[in-house]
Length: 169
Ligand SMILES: [Zn+2]
Image 1 (cartoon, rainbow, N blue to C red):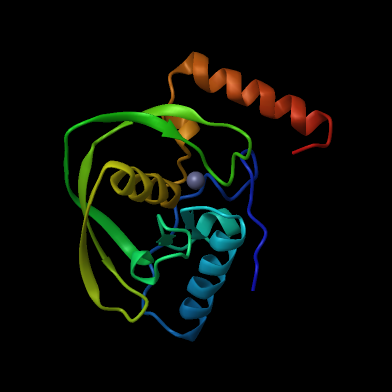
Image 2 (cartoon, rainbow, N blue to C red):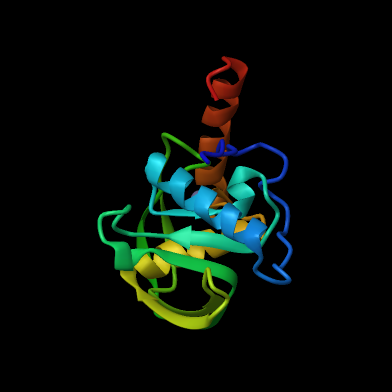
């Protein structure tokens, strides 16, 4: 089922999501809805808080559904290693129409359970490292906009406020 994606400024996006205690049929339904919603957007990642569910679940697929093996489901993910630095353009389905350059580690290792509850270790560099960190940030109520310097962040927030006032957000 497609779920509406919450946008910057919506209550719920800024909450710290709770860990999943056990993967049951409702968790798997949530995961399937998230995958469908990510592909329909289309996007390369989606976190549960973006559809209003405060649970530590996210999905990432750099191929946007073209390569089945690229799909990653991360339940209760944790970063266990980070190194290097990269500066690159980033966007978010919750901040449509905007992008900005964000500084992040260039390599990370994440430990998470998959859709079947099997613990996996995922190493990501470049765009994958960026996408994983972006989605994990959502689980702590953080958007990439919050990682920008004050002046950049203020510019996006001002333009979003203008869209909100015009009923276009
Ligand atoms: Zn995002």
